[in-house]
Image (cartoon, rainbow, N blue to C red; front, side):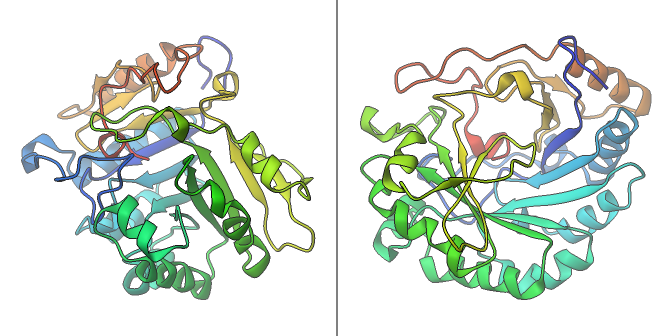
Length: 317
């Protein structure tokens, strides 16, 4: 289905929980979140109904997110049922990787084809600092488990933060030479309510090009990342310039939060509730979300905050 600006909407990002086993500084408050009751969150059946409804309107790609989706007790059932929905061609997941050593084989069997794994540093001390409670080796073990299981595509997501990990750009990019993975550098977005980052943290992705002059343009895949490649690498380097060079004109997605709010745009406060909707009402709400999807969000910067009015863990990273 096309929105009012002619963009074909084919991609649903589905958050199944706002809970997480980490506390990343750019994603959620240091003490975690106030848990909502089960009655406030989408049930498994409502999640599947939402995916079925979205597929009937032309959604073909589904990305399951959180919080951290793997802390959801019924995550395997959700993945299995969503992957079986007629019209869904690709099921992906974004995860911090901590629980992949236990769950990677089961996820793959449940129909998850691709994984994006968050990794912002290769330094143990810095990993503990940015995640507040995490251990680097857990994330690295998760990546190894995913590689062993043989998902069709694995991407490493690195939030680029000036003064924190910009000195690690070459080391992080080198993962694409050591492993068959894409490493994607993502600009820090000014979203969270309790952000501890100064203006210097907001680096444009061009900093990656400056740090890696040997990068060569790679074949583009139609996604939001500009793709490059290191010589003799097994995977690509992706640059996602969500702040400095937004890609609203090509945006093909809508988002559904774990508490049932449909967001036509990540950086808008517009939300349409699907919680408690039957099939017909849910379809009408999705049609409205797609038709009302804005042409572009307002400019973002260190001083111009997102209008989303939610932390990333409450939207779906």
